[in-house]
Image (cartoon, rainbow, N blue to C red):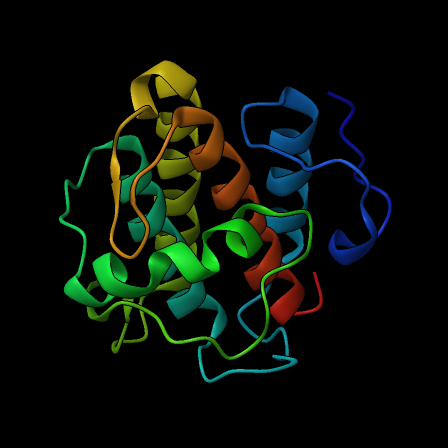
Length: 163
């Protein structure tokens, strides 16, 4: 599958995945440009909060933080799964699971390091290692689905801060 990184996420003809080394490196490069003062384009999170939120999601995807599917996901996820996994960028201002909400304002540098470690762990786990891990809303996902959705999630929050 061809992966394109130049076009905006909502205009890509092929989906990126964190398991593609080029896509992974692109995320790391964008992460390095994020600053504590980067202005948000939407939402309520500060850059450090967004990075901790992303690290928690990666820990869920890699199986480091096992989770159960929420009841609301069991009831409604079938309606949104295709769009979630599709080629379009995540929409702005979507609700998030309580376990992924970051209320404190963590140390920016330490949190960026934590996110990079979570990214490295997720990628080293690979598709096979992520296969079958539970998403809090969508339930059991394949490793390929985790690679796509985690890339889309990172892209979403980096774009939130103009990165």
